[in-house]
Image 1 (spheres, rainbow, N blue to C red):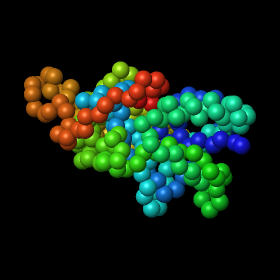
Image 2: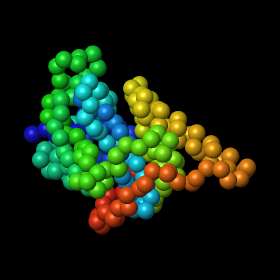
Image 3: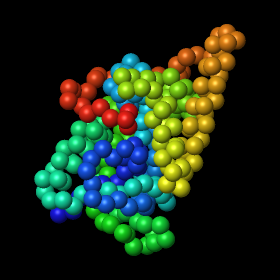
Length: 219
């Protein structure tokens, strides 16, 4: 058995586990969204951060890195244990076909594992759902937790996608809006009050994760 894992977020720039090979490519039928809550690394239960997940969309393409773990059952087990702790806020593991640049008809690898979140705010307590761009940007610009600021996660993703030469327009748009918010907040410090410090979108207060959750730069 060979384990393949698709990284579409922080796994692109910080995989964190021992792998034997990696391939740049894409999956189809899914798009990135910033609709998942993070409450214990880049956010708090009172003011959740927003992190990346995938949601299905016909015709969508999502670029990233497929990692191969091919060092025996023990090595695969260690990788999975690490990933399941790290990706504990994602409640689904799905299997997808992975394609390389230049060949969108025949998969380069089949059965690639992907961690995703159920887009259901009722059944999935960590799913925040979509919000107006300005409100999402305000939330990301101001959320922070023990591991730092939510905005740094977004900016790291923007840079990582640029480094692999496959920028995501939705990520660029969101990052640009966050920079506008930060600029206005900096101006406010100098000129006086004008805009709220937190998003106007109601936030769901969430309970902290159980002890043992792995801390990593994704959040």
